[in-house]
Image (cartoon, rainbow, N blue to C red):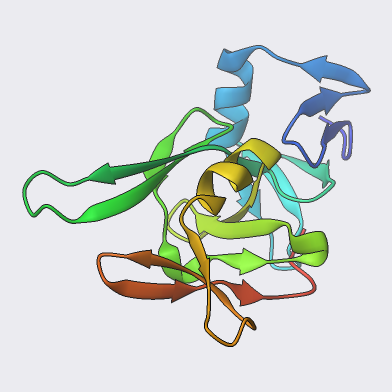
Length: 156
């Protein structure tokens, strides 16, 4: 594999030499072997082979948001569905607003940053409140306020 033959656009769509990659079994292998190097560049590492990717924003994209109640303790949590078809609990303390108010969070045990798609942004927006002074936004979950941090630049 040569470097930069694979591109991931800001919506999480994968391309190989300009052609849309849509086969789930291939993408699953790539997601399983996805890494970020010491310089913050994305790569796929398969055995001895390393293939660097051109990533427009993030490799992971949040495609859906669900508010659920954990039955054993009655507490609510927010779960997210990612573009690799995995589901995980949203780490509330990792919510960030980037350029143009795009939302991001950490995923995969905080190894990667994920961008919220437009649809998932609106799904999460149902739970977002504004502080009394109007300067900050937060999600109130189980009586705790999780503020959305503002950042101008995220790693790519």
